[in-house]
Length: 216
Image 1 (cartoon, rainbow, N blue to C red):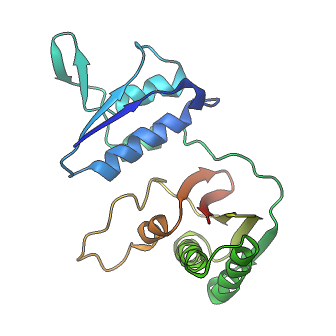
Image 2: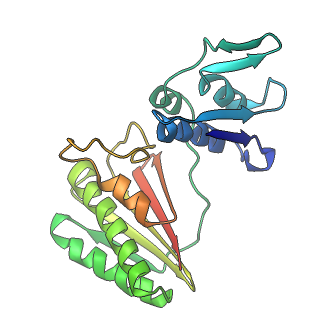
């Protein structure tokens, strides 16, 4: 299988962080699969993190003489750690804000259930989002900090939920590849990614944020 991606400068943002994450995410999710990925960029050098991402996320580069190993290539974890991760767009004040701990996860599920109804989700779609948020909310209080916060934005046909804890995450691109069957734990984020339309993790001065989006 051949996968071709092309650089779109309209998505660069302020610092080009989108491309850092996209390229590293593709490297993780396609690893081990019979896939040839070709990434097209304008002639280098590119500005800021966009150019840096193009350099460090590709193990091979195409020259006039053919493919050659890229000495600047770094594994995804190293590439992400060294370059900025772009936070998602600001959504304005949330419709619901809820602080919770390990013993209050039922309140998180209830809040998402009510929000899914407000968004006019069908039963299956609503239950999927409840389970996805529950997986992330559980991870937050088990691995991030004893207290975490849920924010919810409910629109007709679209539901956004964000979980924040005060912990530090070293690799935001988690859950992109399925865990090994022998792995007893560590499936939560991967499961959540399967149940919603998008899941974005980023680090900030106040801790770790995970934003999930689902559409009816």
